[in-house]
Image 1 (cartoon, rainbow, N blue to C red):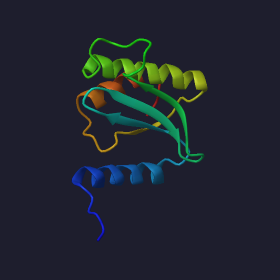
Image 2: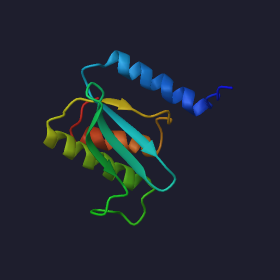
Image 3: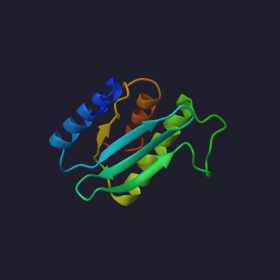
Image 4: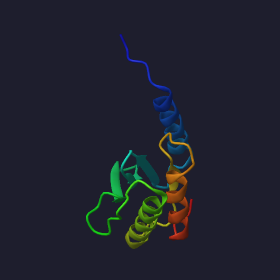
Length: 118
């Protein structure tokens, strides 16, 4: 018997499908949020490769609290700096099924301030 998807998994696949079909020429900025950390990757779907990654779990520049808004905005700034260094300026934001609120919103706004366009 096939496993049914949870509401979160349905929402994640629905948003990812829309992103992949509407923006084929831009890489996507994917966000994963856990209880303790937040992670961001810029993924090129054409080659199925991660271009740039940043997280609150990195050894250099680690904040004392890695689960708050400050840590999320630091990850957003870090991902923007690394993406611009690699030559990526325009991305599509993939919130990964999470509501655009709190830490996800802080990461996105910091990435915009850092120079990414989406």
